[in-house]
Length: 199
Image 1 (cartoon, rainbow, N blue to C red):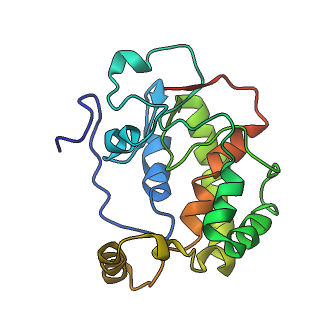
Image 2: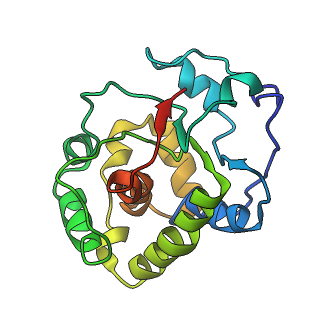
């Protein structure tokens, strides 16, 4: 795929679950022996190109630095990820995040706006997150219907994408689960003393 960075290792995800990219993350990260780990969309360079705060292209040298976590799709320091999720998804997001509070301490707002799991972390940090937070969170969510209610995302997508998604999944709308989970890493690192940088 020409869109991939030349240093990326392709991974074809043939199964779309209700947890979206978090399922491959759970499969890939615990087995990795890399010093730093990133599991990102094949469209990362395109998504970076849509952001004012990120240069479209990055190379391996850009990623060699002293940090614990590097955000690959950086937002403004004043960006409010939880508030924006509420603006996008409304009451279904509030219900889901309130249920998530039974699993993990959730701040009123997040220090770091990390979307679509577009970050690089030290291998030990990412493995700790997946093993001790993400996998247990998915298990926690699996028996709670609030996480699988419609998110309202279909209203914001072009009709052809909604039709394709419905054909693939049988659902009329995306569930809340991936939108909650894409904020989970930011929630998990919020109270940790980690060196977090934008790239």
